[in-house]
Amino acid sequence: MTATVDLTNPIFTDLDAARAHFESIRWPDGPYCPFCGQMETVKALGGTSMGPGWYHCKDCRRKFTAAVGTIYERSHIPMTKWLLATHLMCASKKGMNAHQLHRMMGLPYKTAWFMAHRIREGMRELNPTGQLGGNGKTVEFDETFVGGKEKNKHASKRNKKNIGGAGKEAVFSLVERGGKVRSHHVPNVTGKTLRPIMDEQIAEASRTVSDDSGARARHGEPNHHSVNHSIGEYVRGEIHTNTIESYFATMKRWIVGTYHHVSAQHLKRHLTEFDFRYNTRIALGVDDIQRASIALKGAKGKRLTYETTGRGRAA
Ligand SMILES: [Zn+2]
Image (cartoon, rainbow, N blue to C red):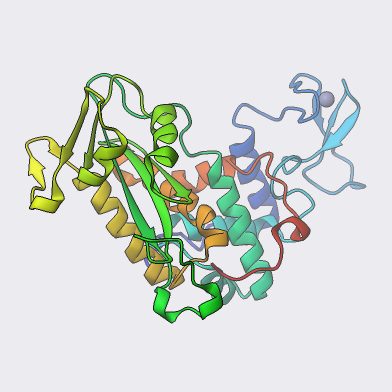
């Protein structure tokens, strides 16, 4: 357990402190109405009928809390526990699976599983949008395969079509050197699948680097360079794929250490979490507390229910 969360912080035990903390993250400039967007017409309801944390908008005449429109709305899980789970997941270098949350927080396993997935949903929107790279910048890309060993699977579950990955799931990632990463769970690693992703997500002026297998998908681009791993070439000055390779190495250690394996069904969510962790890493000036605040901010507009998430496994 490598998390550096201050467990004595009252936001993890005191509901008023937890609510105030969440409000300060959701509404850094003060409360606004989630229905009509007004700030001036919003007043805290002092009355005891609704309980604390309720506001009223004079303009649209509706009542709301900071949780309205977020993954926490209508949750029976207290905000103190949401905050603790989010902080634990964000501070732990290796992430945290539902079993760990269940044991550490004394929650039923199903609840912990549900929370972990909701918190990951919050991370999704915060991953970068737009294009990676740009003039004078380098984007490395590569593919890797994750998942169980084919020989260990029941015959009916083996995927005979997945040559190259031998039944594993294909992941294609792009990383801007010194910047952010974006990972994709892809059905295969053909040029036809990968090229549209690259065209959409890499700024045209970028220098791109891949190994020789990736080079095939990008053949003909004037700014593209490749290292020929098949003849033992790994670095040619600035032409290397060390950034993406070390990202994949860490990702695989994390999957094995934290989840043992991840199913194809949930792989996308785990990639979201892993990309988020990298994109809010300390080297980019983000600390554990800020990372949790960012994840909490992303919780808006992500209301989920047991019905839509299903009752699944940990990973
Ligand atoms: Zn309103």
